[in-house]
Image (tube, rainbow, N blue to C red; front, side, top):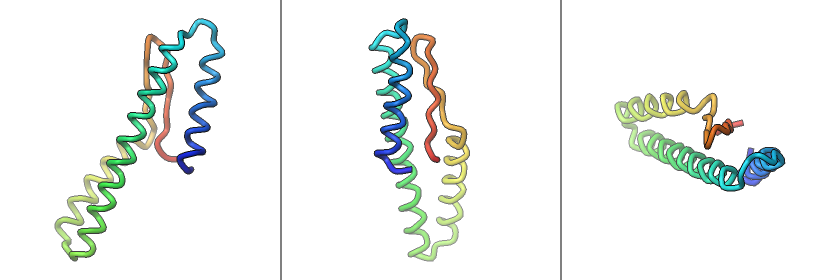
Length: 98
């Protein structure tokens, strides 16, 4: 899923939350900010791992490759089910890959 499609999906989810008249806007904005930060960090870290893997392959450095891929696989495992964000009792589950 590309970034614009993901952003559109997030906005739709936030619109559903906002339709609940009992949810203050600051709570919705806080959840959205948290989601942006989490998604940005995830994609930055993922790109960093992939660059390091490419570097190890280019250098034909098996030890570096094994170390980085092990860390990368742990990283992916940590995010595979998404993450639940919470603000003032309102929970919102975000997914990192689709």
